[in-house]
Image (tube, rainbow, N blue to C red):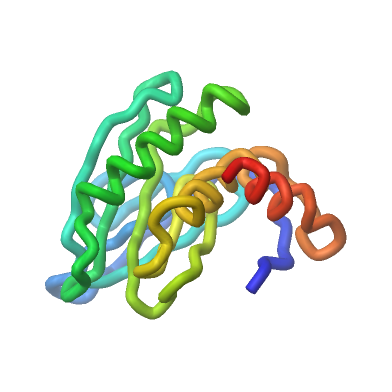
Length: 166
């Protein structure tokens, strides 16, 4: 399940054409109808679906808008996930330095089950990821997103340090 890619940082401007009744959880921030912008990130990720959402602002240490979308039909509460991610951001920022982006987008989807996957400014979580696994995925905002590496050659630099952060 480990990722084996590494990308240099880049700026992304992405226009999404979404099916009616769906919304997107994506890297960066909405920048107008159907447009997302992500600055200085290694990857761009997007999940599209019917989401119930919650938003909180946390301080890591600057204000960070945490947006959580939980796929329709799941029993997971988006406000509970948002609170957990916000707390994790604050804790990890005290340990490893400020979170550098203005937001973090999180999609919770049933197909992922008990795993998660990280992208800069975006995380995808499964149904059974509350607690330490969520903190692991949030820690990847530092260990992969900021401190990039060749994940296939040196997985300890992202997976090992994110696990340590748990």
